[in-house]
Length: 362
Image 1 (cartoon, rainbow, N blue to C red):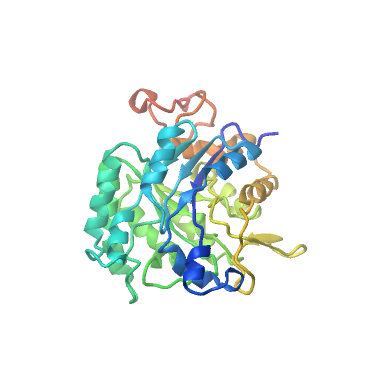
Image 2: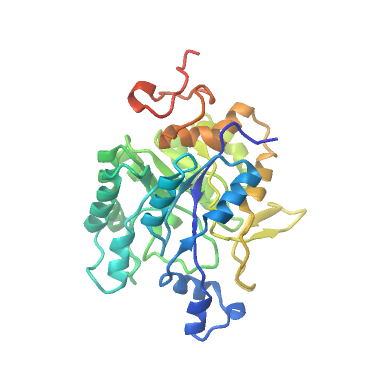
């Protein structure tokens, strides 16, 4: 049985890297390369279109639509092309990929204003539905950045999002294998920082990527993400890497609930899963530093959907998590009106023209 009426993965990477040649150029054997080696190699690679595998998994697991995200080394253009070719299957968010590439290649130094300008131009095309993965940042920086400075970096992008009435994604969580510092994305280690943006920009929907759980078993960042979501109406949580038990607290919280949760699994990232039956959690996503790099396409959807089978909630709530919340904030085209339980202030179908939802009275 299909898990939901209209299933949307809100965090998908349809682009993939082949790192073998880069490892050979550095005289590294693939089987001996570390995650740190991979993180360094990816920044200089050109991504290829991995959509054939994506379509295969979409058919396997009855996934109706995906929100495509660029990540380091990926391009907005490839995602835009996929949206143009398959508008009923994909929408895409964008980021300032050219700005950071130019800075990394020794061109113009990265600035928040240049990044915001690039995103403004991309959103002006009407071909992107938001900003992500995460907020633009200077990955050429090698010194620690303070919260005050990082917030000032993010505000120009928030201004662009407000101008275009667009969605913004802020990254959280750690995969354990790639090096992570306070140089580049410090907010990924401090989900509470997002509250400042939420209060300053209450009209901008903000999605916390991974909602604190990208890898590992710690619930510290998850708890912070819940607090931010519960205390701000414009915060949404991406839950695809949550193990089943993590949904319960969010679902019973009267300030969160299914209407602020959306399924997003980081499909394409190939983060492996560690199994430990009889313990809590029984399995979770994590890069294991002592093991070889993952070469196959990790089956994240199979794992994540099985976690949702643990939930004791109504199907209407499950439909919101699996697609309804995404359809509402990303303004997706859905097959029929009234597929999802009405939530708060609804979109006006006459104003939006793409998604029709039932009024709260019926």
